[in-house]
Length: 489
Image 1 (tube, rainbow, N blue to C red):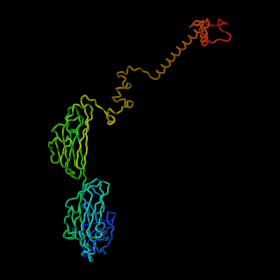
Image 2: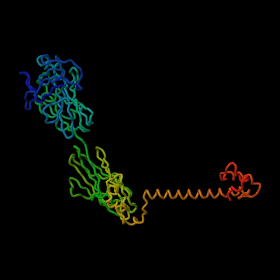
Image 3: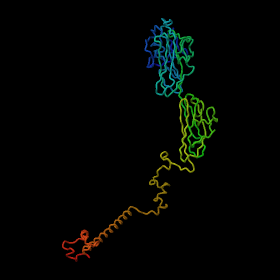
Image 4: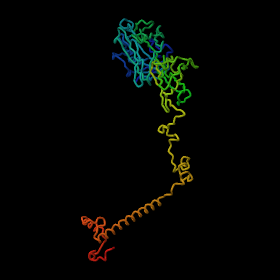
């Protein structure tokens, strides 16, 4: 991993070399930077500080006393932080600075100022993403190139880790060149830097860059991490969401710019349901410029909505109020949902509000599923709480004088059992009496030889069979034909 260092403050390394940190120069914190896993390239022949290149080439020395390995020449930091780094975490509302180091490695004592050692058409260009997403690593990079260097171009980058979805914006006027010549501190045109390339130089942007540390330098520029954001809400002035037929109620829709970037041409639109009728001329707009409110057109209910203007990031706000009439077509306990949408260049958001129709002739509907703590929804245990008012009204044991309690019969378990026994006794006696009487009648009929039910001879066999089943018991010796005295008459 690369050691961190202050590249704005390069060390004086030899009598013939000058420090590049002309603004408040001091020794670097650590001047041994190693090459790290950044998107650099191409893989090329390298040199050392003691043995530089015999031709023009960019950033190929591996042990520069001031910057370490020159192939790692792009870094970034949060503004006002001391050290540049190969990787930073981006946060909304913060500004970051990119550092791009350049050095023609041609040997100053040999070819550095000759045609073979001068980089012709030397230039730099850089890119960074306009948008980054949370959790997705992004890259800021730069390329150094010329018409006669070997290789013709070299590149490097640094990593950006956004903490949330962000927009990255170049900070105007911050692209600057730093060197030991007359160009030090001069602005670099962003159209060139972020386009086809900005020419380098020493005293002017000529594109001619001799070899030697004396002509080295760096470019810096800044970008800002923007995060769009806004909130909306809808409410009823007075906070009551219960309505009646014929009511005129006032809606309020609030917008707040909670992001770090301005939002322009913010549009607000309400889609009224059929049960509500907009009151013409009732709309008013309140915002930073009109805290007391101004009357506005009735555009909030039209298809394209109302353009409520431009609002600064982090501080802009607006409220629109307007009135609606509750139509007579509504019914008791109707639920009326009203929706509003706010549109910006950074997206849209919706808010809704539900109204409940009530009135003198409307029965109250209690929803115990969503309101279990209502008194109407709680179960009453009268066995453990007999003194509760709702228990006393229906408990004859604790309120024997209550209407309907005196007339109740005292029927306990013993009384019920006794009643069952009596009923069974009466039923059994009656059945026994009936069977006995019938048996006596059949016996008499058998003795007389006549059928009590049917005297005809054709039925005699059937009668005899029936009588034999119901005859009284008799001994083997005594039968009616042998001893008529034993027959019961």
